[in-house]
Length: 306
Image (cartoon, rainbow, N blue to C red; front, side, top):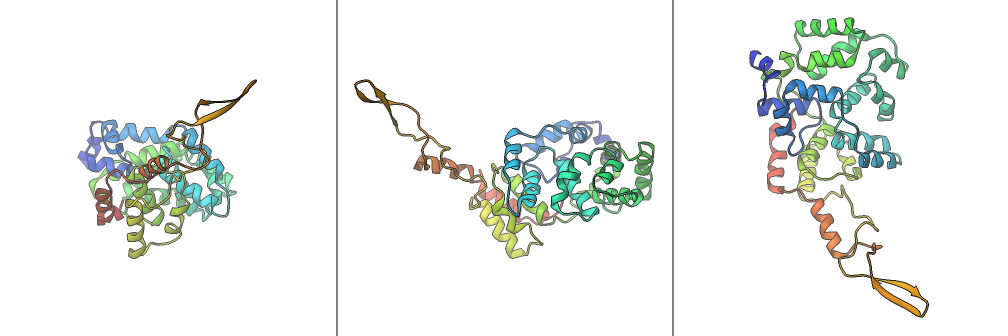
């Protein structure tokens, strides 16, 4: 406990503790994040998630473009994988489960998860239940929390009238949450396993439709193995080639009308179908940098826990 408490003010922190933070406050590390969080330390990283950065414009664009019967589920999955606001997405999932709401309510809940509990409940038409909600929140982040921790969080909840930033700051910087005994203490569900695996791969993700069959229910060992092979083998079209996106590598000709006929001049042109070089570029984007290492990482039993 003492070592965990010291980690709040000293940097760099232990790699295992950084992994724990990224696992519990989000959906696992992407390449380079462990080093970044180690250098930041506990307090700075927790604060960065309690006052999260803006969403990348390209991600916002992709989220707006989602449509169809799976749109809400695809939005939840894409946010879990690609959003820099990782804690926000974990909290959305927690509150939807707590209030027994579906993915469609995510857009209602999201603006309130770092606000007041009263505002969160009002957005969903819920009243009361603060004691049960607080206890559930503590248990979501801490396995078998002590009575002392629950009393400590309850005091903050009462004094701030349910301000979630203040409550989470107390909870997520507590020695009990940071203790080594908490690391890898929970089992990943399908959404968390798939999201953390894709984040670990470092792949650019714009299309989550190929992932949806793997997050609709508990994964069997066979289904998990199939997913790992397809991800490591670059056989999931997560950033598909789109017509009109790639320029030809050959010097194209552009016809320009002139007074005395048509003159051909070199100039850039976007092809209506990808050229072989464009296909190779897209394949490279969909292929993990080190498939063997990724496969070994995802097949490790420790990766099933967080």
